[in-house]
Length: 128
Image (tube, rainbow, N blue to C red; front, side, top):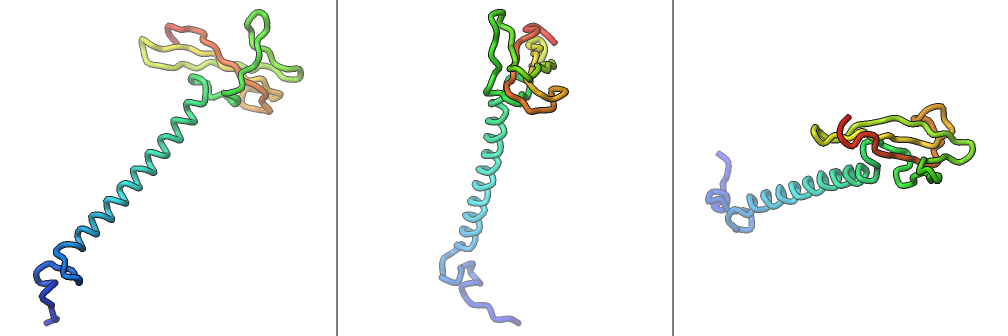
């Protein structure tokens, strides 16, 4: 039979404090939990910040750099660039909206750059 000292027989740790091993373990688990929750919250905040920086459902290349407009309130691209446009829908019925999204690009389509500025406007405020 192995030797058992009085401290371990009554649930004391090596220093003679009752249950402090358990408290240390629970304290450690609490710290791990807080760290994990903090990391997840940080990722969620990062994701929301990136999402909020864009415009509606468009996922624009230059969401903080909208193209200038002419006297007719139409977006215009600088010389050498052309506007490529697509649409997207956002929201749930009955609050859906269709948006037009645009990029001034030297590329062949809205997915190819280089991009110099972006555009976006509401096409249908009452549905998709």
